[in-house]
Amino acid sequence: AIDIEKLRTLTGAITLDPGYKNSGSCQSEITFLDGEEGILRYRGYSIEELAEKADFLEVSYLVIFGELPTKDQLTKFENDIRKHTLVNEEMKNIIDGFPKTAHPMGVLSSLTSALTAFNPKPVNVENEKEMYEAVCKTMGKFLVIATWTYRKMKGYPLNYYDNTKGYVENFMRLMFEIPTEPYKMNPIVTNALDKLFILHADHEQNCSTSTVRIVGSSHAGLFASISAGVSALWGPLHGGANQAVLEMLEAIQADGGDAEKYMAKAKDKDDPFRLMGFGHRVYKNFDPRARIIKKAADEVLNDLGVDDPILDIAKKLEAAALVDDYFVSRKLYPNVDFYSGIIYRALGIPTDMFTVMFAIGRLPGWIAQWKEMRLNKEPIGRPRQVYTGYPLREFVPVEKR
Ligand code: ACO
Image (cartoon, rainbow, N blue to C red; front, top):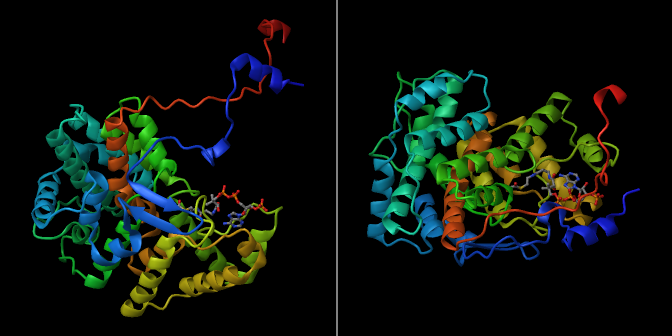
């Protein structure tokens, strides 16, 4: 048997904290989160107030630069982002190389990384003008390439930002406009999306943000770090949960729509099935974003007159989990992904694109955290480990094994 205690004396004392459940990796001024009380604030402003009174670019500016923009600053920010929405034509060749069946998150991560080829000059984070330029460039180009991942899947021709429309309106247009028909804006849809993007804008040191910070800590560039963040977000235990929620609801419906049966499966410790969209690493109270978005989901479903059996199953699961001992005792409440998936479906966003939507919302947070980490001159992220493998062994030549 391996004497871990002895090994520890050889390597020095190391704190072992798998999943970093209790380890702070940095000091940050961006987002305050109290999981016990269900509080989330960006730069000191409550998420409830921001979701109600601000729009996504205003919140992005706040998250990235630390203060709410004045009217002039906001107008300039919107204009400067617009100026950067053109994407190098050669990027289109790269997109053409992907099969139509490629998952949009894989394409998005690759395209974000590919942007480094067309923007090779590293950003001097201490030069405010250069950093501002890099922020606008990232916000502009990322939105366009994110929607192109969908257009590729559908075989639609690639299109460009409409300078007469806002950022969130442009998202819908870029996604859904087809050459024969101009896209009709629906303010209910754009308002709901704006709110969703705000709720996703930052969430302190979650898996993808920690990834962006740690990749950036080697002084890798902004696009390269964000590309890594996209990959981290993709997984079903993180951003991919919103897609997993819908796939789970569809599977329940295909299996006869029996929500109770799936509640039982989720509680069975011999069954790996988990109720997607329930539970959170940090919120052990209600996810405050889920509370806001539940209300928005109800409004959107009413306003759009959506009648969908999948959504009925979601409501049954939500109601059952809120009174079930297993879920209540483990504080497994519906999280933001549970409701965001429902809204995206009601808005006609395809399931494969749900995590891309999350990435668009999270972009300002990734940028802000990357910038803060570099300005703080943080050392390279390099966790240690507790080695549990063999002690020194003698090499055995292949013919003697
Ligand atoms: N369904 C059933 N049981 C669950 C669920 C679930 N969704 N989530 C947690 N549990 C149970 C675990 O089995 C465990 O039970 P035990 O104490 O009897 O062993 C207990 O609750 C604690 O679970 P952990 O996995 O230790 O909690 P952790 O904080 O590590 O995980 C996580 C949080 C990953 C979010 C988890 O709740 C989960 O897998 N949820 C489903 C996926 C999901 O919705 N992810 C989105 C997260 S939000 C976001 O990324 C924006």
